[in-house]
Image (cartoon, rainbow, N blue to C red; front, top):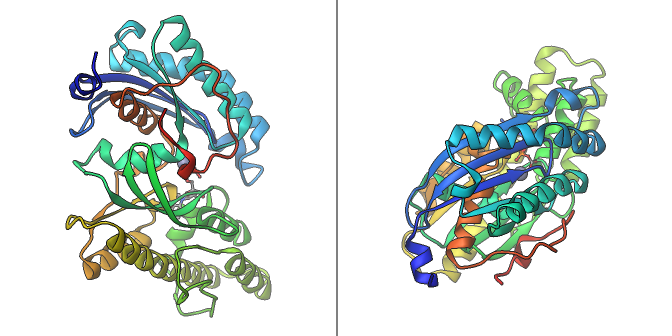
Length: 357
Ligand code: KG4
Ligand code: ZN
């Protein structure tokens, strides 16, 4: 079949995601240029297994993926009502992520593809997040993406399924990590983001004077380590904070994060506008931290001021899931691309390196 014919055809792909603490499998049917159908989207969160440790323990995560992945894949296939023979390809996250987990998911995806003689797609987890808005929106390339999660904080121009220009990234910690650390210091448990957001609603965002690293400077890089240290100092100063003091710290922290994100995203919008003549300009926010309503509101206002449309995918597609991996597989398959079985799992894999083959 010619490439043009393949790109017009509806493709059905099984996606597998195991790069962090979610064991996930999904089946998506569609083609680029139209909103696809998510036939199934099964996610098993390991939050309970990691809660006592205050964060994800890689070895525990990898073992849990081994224990559950077969069942999750079976559920995704049954939920979609398709057989392996009906699939056009099998996509697995090949990185970046916790290497033990990535190995489990990638080997499973390769094995299914090999046994059923189907194309295999090694998907970059970040490409999954970057392309995820096209699961629910008729969103043409290029668009600007803010990816904010527990492991990443980046601003990118998404120019095609395999074409990304990185405008900036964090030079130290990811923003989700800063939320999780703040929650830990305030005794709010894990995962921290939703808990910090919840108590911040009762707090005074001006209560504590916190740094806004890199704001006012050119470029789109982020830095959160100084903010993390300042929060540690603030929490230390009050020892056992009252509910109101904890709420004030959380609100001040969240306001500082919003200021940083607004400043950096504003610079990225300028850069995007200079690089792309398109009049249809869109900013998409993805990754787990995109669930934060204060951040969403701030981005919404920023977009309105700068003539950008603001798109935030539904929350269950913002956090780690396999539908986005299946979809990234479809986007590549439609270009006539697939991967050999000797692709290696990667702990680190910058998105800008993702190239066609
Ligand atoms: O994308 P994700 O599910 O996993 C990866 O890191 O890849 O993101 C998880 C991160 C965690 O750090 C969590 O605390 C944060 O997203 N998060 C939030 C909120 N919900 C989840 N951060 C701030 N506000 C939230 N409402
Ligand atoms: Zn992720």
